[in-house]
Each structure stands twice: as structure tokens, then as C-alpha cells.
Length: 323
Ligand code: SF4
Image (cartoon, rainbow, N blue to C red):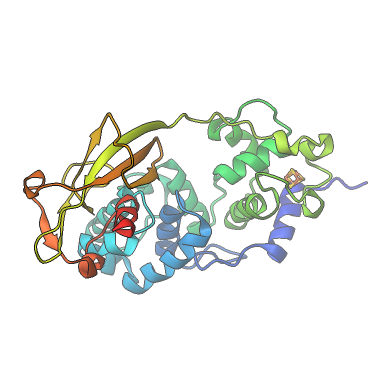
């Protein structure tokens, strides 16, 4: 009996069933490294369904590295608004400037050069090499961790580093871009976190977890406990009904975005209207309250209808929805 080659089996499945996405070209590397770079950064903490909308809007607004490099940061943040993790947008903007200054507006083709750029870490560098230049890079995201852990039937706790060497063994040397897309699609479409569709899977018959019927127990991943924080957000209006907002100047998570003045507190008020937002490492509950102008000396007065001109974080958009 001929032994099935898992890499070939997966590629065959992908050519027939893979998702058609605007930043992907099935059968080769994608024609635009710029589109690959932007989509890769967007996809880091955002689902494909959400990125599809933003990607199109982004490409209309900033069709080239040059258009992005010369854009105002406020415009970049407004186009990104709603996707969260705004550091990504600021780094993309910074990176576009470096690309114009030092790389004639081109995306470098080697991993070492890519790693020198702002906002591009080892994962993004591998992804860009793979999807834009068809290199046989092993790209390990959450989907790949789950698929590989199940394929090899690993019941111990896993993470990207423990999965990497196993994933690397299956990577196609000739079809790097297709293979990386294929394994991600397998994770997103069939090898889903619960109730994987093993009967439709190209690895059915090869997969140890499926043979042992332990798919739903794999992967074991250590969950980080999220800290809980609380704060007061001050809703202050002038005689014309305008709201007091300020630009965040502090370096960090929400730098450069606009917000209603707020501060962290240790005791939460009872019965106040509130919004809850979950960041990567903590959960924040903001309680809406009134306040005086002196709370926010650096603020400006803005009509609610003009909020669209000010990039707000997802957290602050939740506050706006409560007004
Ligand atoms: S057979 Fe099932 S568990 Fe194994 S890789 Fe395929 S979908 Fe996942």
C-alpha cells in the first residue's frame, strides 16, 4: 500500500477548498508584498472576517507604501479604528517611512532585513517571507498549534516553540506559501477548536488524535489569568452640549488615540452605568460618572457628531455608545 504523504494530501485539499482571500494567491506567492505585510499585521490579533472589511478600506485609502508613509498618523489611526491594538497601526506607519527612506518603498525579501523594520518580529518576518516570496518558512499560529498537536497526538501542554520543530517537518520546500495557507485553513475550516470535522479532513487516517478519538482534549494550552482593573470615566459637557475629550499622550497601549478623561480606581461605584473591555493581559471595567472641567485641563470640546474625526479606541467607542 502506498503511504500517504501528509504535505501532498494537505496541498491537494487546499487547492480545491482553500479560502480565497484578497491578500493571497493560490498556487504561488502573492503578487503584492505590501498587501501581504499589511494583512499579516492586521491578522495578528483580529479575525479574518473582520480583517476582510478593514483590508479593503485600507487599500483604498493607502494603496502604496508611499501613500501610507506620507499620510497623517491621525488618518492612519482613523482607518484602523475598531480593530484594537493600535500599536500595530502606529508601527505600520513608522515602518512605511523607513521603507521609503531606506528601501525605495520596497518590502525587503530576506528575513534578516525584515527583522530590522519597526513592528516586524520573527512571526511576521516568517509570514512575509513565506506568503510574499514563497519561502519554505514554518509559520506557527494558534490554528497550526492545534492542528499539529492533534496530528501527532500530543497530550502534554504545548506552545509555539514546542510545536515548531514538528510543524517544520511537514512544511513544503517547493510550495511554502500554499502550504502555510493550507495548514491555517485546515485549522480554521475543519480542525476547529471544538467538534473538528475529521471525516472531511485530508489527514483523516494519518492523525493520531483522530485515531485515538482524543481530538477534543488536544491541544492543552496554559491559559493566562487576566487581572481585573476598574476606573472612572468622566462625561463632562459644556453649555452647548459638547463633550470634553483629550488625546492620549502617554506612551503605551492607546498612545495617540482620543478618550474621555478617566482614571483607575480601587473601589467601584455601585449602580453606575459601565463598560467592560478585555485587553490581552487584563480586563478593565469603566464606570461612567460626571465631573468638572478641571479634571481635564488638556481637553478640547467636541460635538458628538464630530467624533468620527477623532480616532477612539474600542474601549472609548463603548463609552460613546452609552452616551
Ligand atoms: S483528523 Fe481531525 S483532529 Fe486530525 S487534523 Fe484532521 S480535523 Fe484535526
